[in-house]
Image 1 (cartoon, one colour):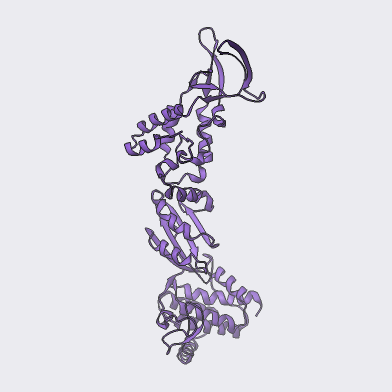
Image 2 (image 1 turned 90 degrees about the horizontal axis):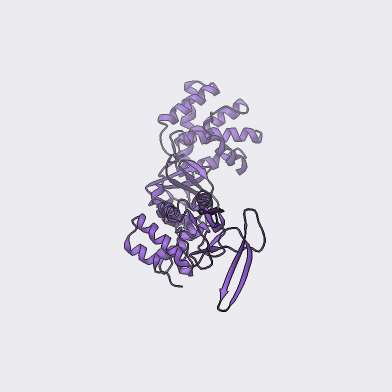
Length: 424
């Protein structure tokens, strides 16, 4: 048979093993024996698994008539390896026998021969830990000490599972990685935990509601370094960092001396009034977001200059910067909205006021020319520069805005106290 025919041949055999919706370790080992019997490589076996797992898979005869008979014999062998031919497996055998065009008597004879082959087969099993061959008469694997009783386990595993249509779901394949065993334990604690066999490998799934994503972080930690992992958001496969971009930051928060201060940057002697460092919009003289807006003249004589904040642009910048952190359990969007609401719509910058002009090195689009007269004791001098925005006179301007926002959100008193206890 050609390589393509070997793929179809093996897919017919694998299709039988999957027919009842589950697959046992005995069936998996028997399929590998069939692969070796027809001289196929692992490449053909892997392709056969992929074809058999397709929703469009339909068994079909391949090769000469003798090859087709041999294929039927192997199908029946797989069906009988873990017990009698029943249910969907029985119908699968009958349908394939019809394609081969043999009589009922011939089919009965093939089944008898398959039973005889199985009963006369070597009573060896494969160690589930090191893959060494073990005699069933032994109690432990001579290579690694694994219990033979464990290796004889025939507990079937499903051949597929449904990805939940809501929440966050993580699936990963069996691996030799250091964190694999702990990852399996973590996935089994999930509200939805499943297991199946795909392409010869066991795959595990753990799923949580988005509101409980913090409980998934333990599994995320154990999956570091493992290649075969996927994440689904509301049933759709998504980039890993698009869902768990916040995990490293949340881990740092959990280990912080005062976690409530961490998100506001106070542990670093800085202030972030948005409640998330990843917003990258700190309360500082050099903050670009203090230039999101425009200057205009105000007053009866239009002599007062005011700066009007563009809150829509500020909101857009925050949402963009926080996209990969939007599922963080510590992120408080209601507080962000409250801060935006509390932030003045417009301010009048002055040298000694709460808001001052932001000084630029050169002229830029939207900038204005500022000419300030400064008195210093007996001396008077003039400052001239361009300005494209404003800057707060001190950190306490920001703390006052944050205090009002926390009250608006009805934050717990102890939480507000931790955050507002700023030390210069």
